[in-house]
Every structure is written in structure tokens, then in C-alpha cells.
Image (tube, rainbow, N blue to C red; front, side, top):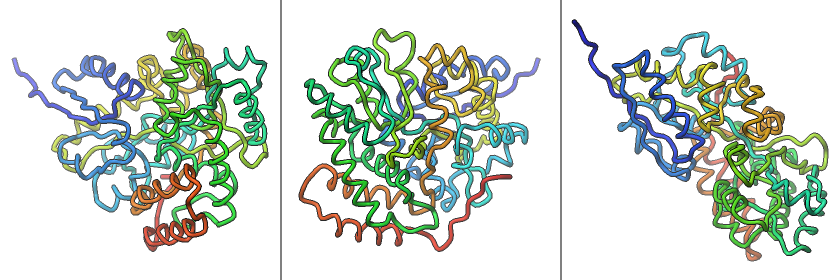
Length: 398
């Protein structure tokens, strides 16, 4: 009798049910047909996922759950394997045709596929339907209607919810400036001054109605608070988390499209979020890692076990799964259009350097009255230009 040598695949994820739930659930299913492959997932905080240094962890892991803005840096640093050389053509084609919104495109760079989308999200709005209905309030569709709702909420002694930690203010800045017609692009200039000023003004106005703890909140902390307390009926901008609309919750949140910040319907340009899964160039088991990656991203697992373990899949067919949509409070049907039209931020190799340096500048302008908007705009315009490569080459198709 011969035995296949056991192989251990080690991966790094972020520590929330939306990410870890489907990864943990996948292990016994994958091992049924691959008993010789052991899977281990380590977890890191959401902040490390969105802002951390990939280069610090590459040598420790075979698989990494990553954020797409790092793709330019990863391409330049040769961090990851090109998945076109490791995955079945059929799986890649399926994702290129049916990944939600620009999710698939977001992991393509310099004619390589450096990760496959495993999770998709965009900035959306969220409400407590029970509070909204009891007060006779309607969901706002435009920015003007949002301010009218905010004033009505304030009169009742309640608050608007708003994830306003520095990184979330920066993400909201990207959403609103794109919606106003001046999106940051790989090969473009920084936001024009008029749009910059208007965006900062909108963010300041929104924050004036927000809960006092908002500056400490990321989306998870905001939604946790909304579930546990009854003084926030609505939040206008934050990445969607299907977990909070699950039928298991006695108090549920409902997710919706963002408002039209330019007051023109339908609303567009909620910032793309989500996550991809990549294979480190330092892995000495890329074939085995690719086999497990293919299982996680397969249409079959994405449309069944991935969702029901609390995951938010990237595959379009999974978002159209009616059973899943009902189980998660119609999260998918109510946010699919928004995510299909999400705004894809730049991914050139210097973008994350710019992003990290711009966060405190934008946050300071929004949260205080002492900032100089003109000076900040000139400073950020120069930083954006300095961080850009002479050419940023991306692909949309294979």
C-alpha cells in the first residue's frame, strides 16, 4: 500500500466571519477529495488587510487574501504567481464573464492575473427598517434627500451612522469625488479643485449629523452598534456586509444603493471593495495551493457553501441565488446593481503610498475647521503626481 505525502498549505485571511467563515467551512469539503493536503488559515485585523505591508508576510504564506489596490505594487514587486499559468482556463473565463462588477478586472495588471476575486463588496447604504418605518421615513435617493432625512433624524434626538475612521473617510472621499465626475484614475490627474472642495464639504455636512463615536468606527463597528442600539436608523456610506442582514439576527440591517451625490438617478460609483486570493511567489507548493484556490473560487462552492457559511462571494451566479438572497434579507438583490456599477480606484504601484499619506490629510479637513482646503488640494495633487509611474498598463480581457 502506498501513501501520498501530506502537504500543508498555509494562508492569511482577515478576522471577520465574512472572510473566515467560508474558508473554515471549505476545509473538510476540500479534503474529501484531497486528503493529503492540510489547510491552515491565520487571521489578521481588517486594518492590516486594507493598509498593511504585503511584503512583510509573503515569505510566511502560500495563499493570501488581499485587497485589489495592492495589485500594482504586487506586480512591480513580483509578489504573486500569474494565475493564468496555474488555474484551469475554464475557471478564469467563468470569472471574467460573471464576476460581479469590476471585481475580476481589479486583479489584472501588466497582462497578468495576480489574484482571483473571492469576495465582492462596494460602498452601499444601510438602514434599520424597523426604525425607519416606525417614524415614517423613506430611504433617501439623492444627496439632498439624505440631508433632509438627517435633519429629521436629528430633530428626534437620533443620529446618522457613519464609519469615519481615517481609512473610511478616505474611501468615502473616493466614492463621492467619482460620483461628482472627477474619479481618480491610473493615468489621470488628482481631483479638480472644485470637485475636491465640494466633496470635502459634503463629507463635513454628513459628519455633522453622525453619531459622536463615528470617528472611531469602521463599517463593522458601525453595524455592530446599529444592531445593538436604537438611535441610528440609517448610514449613507460603508462597505456592505451581508452578515448583518442574516435571518438569524433578531435585529436586522437592510442594505441599499448609495444616494446620488450628483442628484442624478440612478446612483453610481460606490467604491469597489471585496477581496482576492493570491499565491505567493515564495510558496514551494503553488500547484497544491492553486488546487485549493480553484475549489474556493469555483462557481459551485461560491454559490452554495461559501454563502451559507457567511461569505460574500465574487461570482455573479451566487449573487443571483434566490435562497441565499432570502436568507440574507435580500442583501444581494438590493445591492447587486450598485456593486455592478462600482468605482474601481487606481491600482498603480505607488497608489497605496499615496493612499496612506492622503488619509490623514483628508480626515483632518473633514473633521476639523482649521484645515486649508486650497493648500491641502495642492499638496495632494503633487503627491498623486509623484506617486504615479510614467505608464500604468492594465488589462480587462484575456
